[in-house]
Length: 353
Image (cartoon, rainbow, N blue to C red; front, side):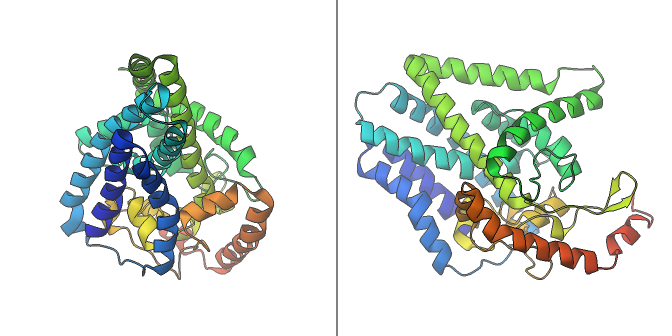
């Protein structure tokens, strides 16, 4: 667990120091999650997959620690950015961007891991993290919609070939909000407390706490941090599923999700910082697999030309993005069309109970 622990907790420590002292620590936190991560990805060797059986307890412990640390960092940032007179404007700007990147890349990835874990306390912690940044419905939409319909037109969070991020983001946000609600409603059929009521209450509590800490400035800080964090999660979805589609093996029935339906990044440092979120194909094939055990197969899985954070930046430049990615999508689709329909055959075989 060393690579995950060092990469993530170093960022937590730098942010904590920035929120207390500002100055050089605010600079260090921003540099760490941007330039330092970029250069470490350039020089670090690909880390091998860890043994999921051996690392599962340690993986959960780190996820729990990061989930708990999320809240003092978020609301400490709200307090500093929203009202503190002890920090300069430059400090507040640096802290805003460093904290926003942490929320979008580390906390989002960790909350994503938590909502897939079996223990109820971990799932609830993941929901609380999402609700605190006003994105609670993602906990339902991701599990009930995205993992069911990924790489099909029924998934709001799968980007279409030629679709810019600026067209994708509002469609995905609103589509996931509605689709997640309907999926939960069908599952519960009017019984029990609807999860969307919990998400709404969590968002309201987060806004109230921001106001208590820093007044209307705190509200503005929380809205800004949440918007930035949500945009990064949408960027991850955009990058990791852009243009990839599942073939239809029967009317209205797509082939099972396979390694060819997600883009992956092999870069060791940013992968550690994001708890192996860039190993996306294996996660979709095995959603319950703990992040230390996620594997990467360059021969079977589409590989991004740069790390996930770098590709997210390129996605903000649609002409550049299409020049880099569209021909790669075409090659993946061509390989997929040439493969024998082994997945369709497998789907017709008797399944284990």
